[in-house]
Image: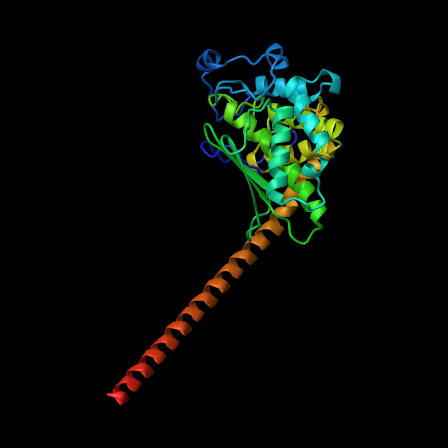
Length: 327
């Protein structure tokens, strides 16, 4: 649902049972620890406290947990403790409510750009500038697409695509799009700047939604609720992401102690995973229906093309006969 690193697709694994314990890392993934330790850079809280504008950091040089710890710390700060960049972002949000409004006065693209810049400066230290680092696209859903958004990450750039959900009220669509945007920006932040040597470790990004991702997602969702009065899903969003990984990527069920940090109960998580399994049959049926529709449309286009060619042939024949008569 949320592929986050195009260059490194995860290997296919069987779905693990709930009885399996949390792994330290995926057995099929090998990590060169000595390389990673010499490669990693620090990102200190003291440095980030003093920033007054967006910062530039090297891509692929940080442990995901280092990036996560920094984002979590600043997302949890009270308003009077924010750094200068965060205060500036919050002041812009309060001074220009129309720019962030869901009433339809702005185009979807303008709204997403405004929220992307706000989230970036408030939670990610300005490391995700639009266009130069992150591009955000809003597109209609194609047949067979059963997810809300996805993020593709390269070494130094990311592309976030958010899909329209037709048939629902505009306000709902816009809020859902911004919710999805926040989720995908976490992927972009960890994906671009996280170490490419050890990102698959469960403590880092894991298969997609590892500990570093879920810690960051939970904190920034909570920060968005507290500072912006934007109801981003906290534990519910983390539960959905983790259930997807367990079902689709074979990630093992974490221990109850780990789940509690994201306000997820084991029972609720198991129910979500079962929901994905039950949905498989529906997805397959929908996919088959979409393929049938595509074939039907293709056949119709071919018939129309033949019909047009036949009309042109008849017209050209008639023209030839008329020309002969005139001669």
